[in-house]
Amino acid sequence: MNRVKDKVCIVTGAASGMGKAHARQLAREGAKVVLTDLNEQSGRAVAEEIGASALFLRHDVSNEQDWQRVMAATTDHFGGLDVLVNNAGLMKMGTIVECTLADFRKLQAVNSEGVFLGCKYAIPLMEQRGGGSLINISSIAALHGELFNAAYTASKGAVTALSKSIAAYCRTKKNGIRCNTVHPGGVLTPMVVKLALGVEELSDEAFQAFDASGIPEGLLCQPEDVAGMVVYLASDESRFVSGAQMVVDNAEVITAPSPV
View 1: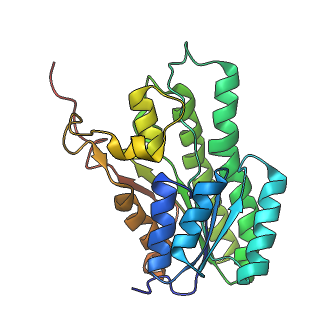
View 2: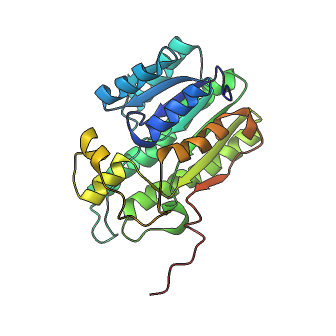
């Protein structure tokens, strides 16, 4: 307990899935958490569940003015910023031939431009506190490529490369800010279940009823498994970790495929 006591954290995409798990776990470890999402109803419910140490804000991560508003509200409410978890993201299946330009641009706007904007506006606030931690959720898709996921792979590759640039910048500036990427493999989240079922919308009841027994053991982890890594990177335990790619995938990337 109290591994991140009194640290002020922003978690984007916190209404469900991994973001919800990150926010809960950070709060359990003593943090003050600003949860942001476009899903106001679910986001407010998570914040209310956490209690007085949480604040929900509606937030489109692809919108620069929204980022400025979120940073100002965080500072007004909690007095500053120590940790940013850039978790919000979209996935749209499709090979390079199948993917439309519109879909490609939409994923870049949310998955990579959203991270750019978050880090851009978080750094000055963290410098005022003498340091901080930028945690950008990437994917193993950025490490080995996924032929069926061209736009998503490209967006997560951009997050990974940008994070290295930010880490190098912060080291040179000696501003005490760390920047790392987290690379989950498969995670049992509503986004993944929607893709598995081929649906655009998924109720909480349908997600809870989803039968994952047909998925090979070890292929999917729980959001809490990724949240553990996020808490570590948010805490002072990782004070000398920056520019790293933290993989949470049960050795999927380094395991050779089974012979046909």
